[in-house]
Image 1 (tube, rainbow, N blue to C red):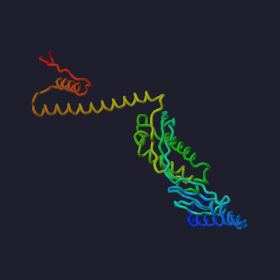
Image 2: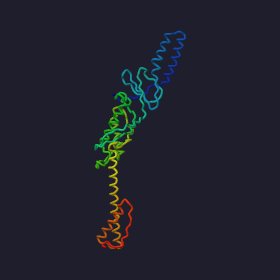
Image 3: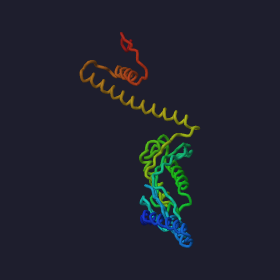
Image 4: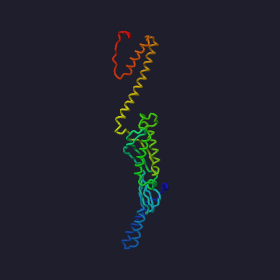
Length: 285
């Protein structure tokens, strides 16, 4: 298929003026019983002049074909006159918004997930959009669904099961959007379509595993939080022992240090309020 060819036909105002003149001549000829002149003028007017008038609205185009051959595309908005025997197909150049349906697919590690994408696209080559594919709207829908499925199969949902993953569907939204846009442009280039933006609009675990995966995420978050708390508590205990030793406030043997460390860790790492206990004796009695 040849690439798009933009044409600039003559203004339609001159042709429309000619149409009015021929129409007046036809009416006058018939009124004065000049049948032959009236028929000739009427035929020229309604067969050659009027059918060639076309109006192209802003952000629209007219794809012209003559006896099965592609003539060109009128992209400039306005009032024009073209060959009256051409077939004129209107193609919108506006941006389209595709809100994809939710798809149930498996991610890279096999977890069933639900995913959907919002895609903004427009036609950049009207010739390919009309002649290279059967139905460019249907083509966009099918190829977009295929691209989203392929994307979901290529990356894990998160790092829980694949800790080495550099890009995840949940955590790498920007990278995933760039990759989705790139793949869509490659798939839709055949139809002369350009993807302006593509983003994941819905992402979740499938209902049958959602509760289990939520518990797993909560457990992982608790473990991470506990690890951070313990690391902080150990640092505070080290600092406390060092300051006590530096200030010579009290001399502690190893057993007293162990007891102090145990008490401090209980206080710092516990998830409940601690009730103080006053020890009036010693550790040995």
